[in-house]
Image 1: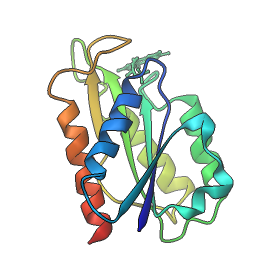
Image 2 (image 1 turned 90 degrees about the vertical axis):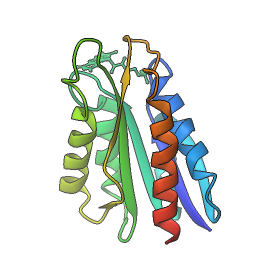
Image 3 (image 1 turned 90 degrees about the horizontal axis):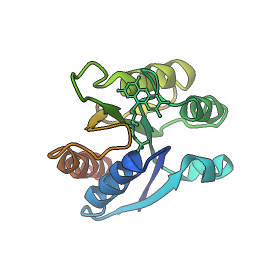
Image 4 (image 1 turned 30 degrees about the vertical axis):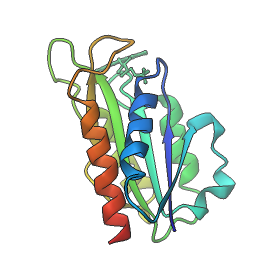
Length: 157
Ligand SMILES: Cc1cc2nc3c(=O)[nH]c(=O)nc-3n(C[C@H](O)[C@H](O)[C@H](O)COP(=O)(O)O)c2cc1C
């Protein structure tokens, strides 16, 4: 059984919904065991049991939240050779897509710099919300299921 943990931070629940929908997509693939945790509930001392770590953040001021950046910092102190990661974000795209992928790109950059042992399993997923508090723009959620399914299939391959 391959183990995946999906860690997220979410002020208004949208990124949480994305995390849950990714898990839904993953659970359709046999041989994958998933755990979902809000960032503050993660016990980093047990992080090494997971084969893949997925990290999700709302876009706050053009990048991941402070909490997510600190989490990545702390994660870097653990032995993660051979482990995989992927990231996802939500951003406010009311008038434009200016913030599309901004937080995921920053997370990838920080992870590559601070935790070179972790290898990216899939390109980041960036989903648009309609307002500060959501909801997620129609047509975005199915992408989460696909993202989860794709990662799970890659893991068992
Ligand atoms: C303090 C704060 C700063 C934000 N800054 C940005 C921003 O720079 N760009 C953007 O696209 N959205 C920004 N947003 C909107 C968030 O991306 C949006 O609230 C989030 O995607 C909703 O996800 P959540 O329900 O998981 O919190 C900001 C939201 C907050 C609360």
